[in-house]
Structure formats: structure tokens, C-alpha cells
Length: 273
Image (cartoon, rainbow, N blue to C red):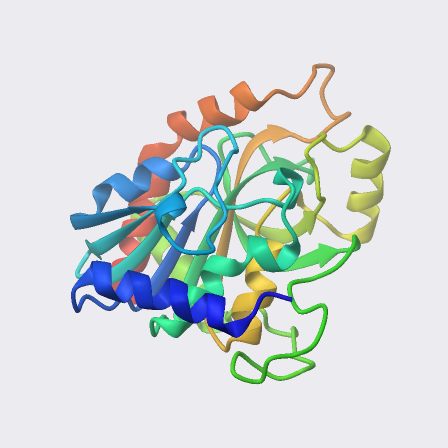
């Protein structure tokens, strides 16, 4: 279990670096989506390695830094890249940044990821509004003694993804003309891509997309009492659907190709918050 003092020391370091700036919103950008962080106005850049006790991000396409500033008039903390379990971290370490942001006063989190489309009606390049998730593997960030300073021992996950924010996202999609799928995200630990049999099982269980991130952060944020909005960018059809191998290059290429529609949707949502 990570000592509460570590979170405090990380938060204190950031307060000093931010010089009075206090973010209200945490935006976590997944693989291929990090470019949206470059839209932050008056940015304050803080690489993860400079923050006490913060793990480094080693995933391709992840800059591994915070960008603090404003977008659409909102005070934001943007994570350009995240920490994954497959990098050798625990679920608690993967969600570390969420708890640090809670100590800085953040109340809302928008989390994004690149994912494989499990739903056969989806197409690469489309964005999915996350309405729920499935996690069947291993431990969560809440494993071990509970710290009441973050939340209760048994947090309710019935509405992990805030209905009010979901409706706001639907309105933003209509106003920007962005096609928005909706569905359930299934978490796999990675780093290997899922097998075709695993994807068939995921579909039977009700999953519409599959990926290697996001859920540990959502659990921690829900435990902390944050409101949460989640999006998956379908960068490929999941394993076994098409007769071709899966590659990380495809993930980054689709993210680059979709950056304008993704940015348009995010900007409209931030205007509405």
C-alpha cells in the first residue's frame, strides 16, 4: 500500500510548481490522443519523473507529463500519457495520479483510451462513449487497507460513469457532428493483445471494446468521489475479426487521423462543463 504521505508530498510539489493555479478537471489522454494536450493555454509542463514518488510512463506515444493550464476557459490538469500495469506497476501505482489530483481539488475526470472494437458494428476511427466497464483480472487500486481520507471501504460502482456527463457528451456529439458510439469497455492487463477466443468471450459478456488501461483510474476516481466521463477511440477491430495482425503502429496512426474529430468533441464538452 502506498503511504498517504507519498500522495501528500507529490501534491505539495505540484502546488509549489503551479504557483497558485488549481485545476478543476483531470483529463487523461490515451495512446494516439496525447496531441489534445498541446491545446492547453498558458501551459505549465511537469514531466512525471520530476514529481516525487510518481512512476514514469514508458508506453509508445505517451509523453509522460502533466500539462496544467486552461482549455475552453476550464482549469485543467492534462496527463499526456498514463501508467499501465504491463509496465510493471501495481493498480494503485497506475491510479496514483488520480489520487494526487484529488488532493489538489480536482472534482471531475475525463478519461480516454485507444481500444480494439469488439462490437462488429463499430469501425476503426469511431469514438465510443463508455457507459460501463468489465474487469475480471487481478487486483484493483483499492486492494489492501482502506484509507478513509480518499473514500469508503466499499464504493458503489453502479454509476461509475456519471449519467449527467454522458448526456452532456451526447449533446456535444450532436452539435459537432461527431459520430458517437456507446458501449461497455472490457479491461485486459496486456501488454499482449487479446486472443480471438478472448475477444469472442468478451463479446458474449457484453463488451463493445477492449483495452489495457482506464479501469484502475476509474475505480480510484470513483472511490475519491469524482464525476467521471470516459471515451474509447476504436483504433482497430479486435483480434480475430479481420485477417490481419494487430500492431501498435496502427493504434498511433488512427489516433493521428482522428485527432480533429476527437478534439472537436472534447472542446465542445469542455465548453459545456
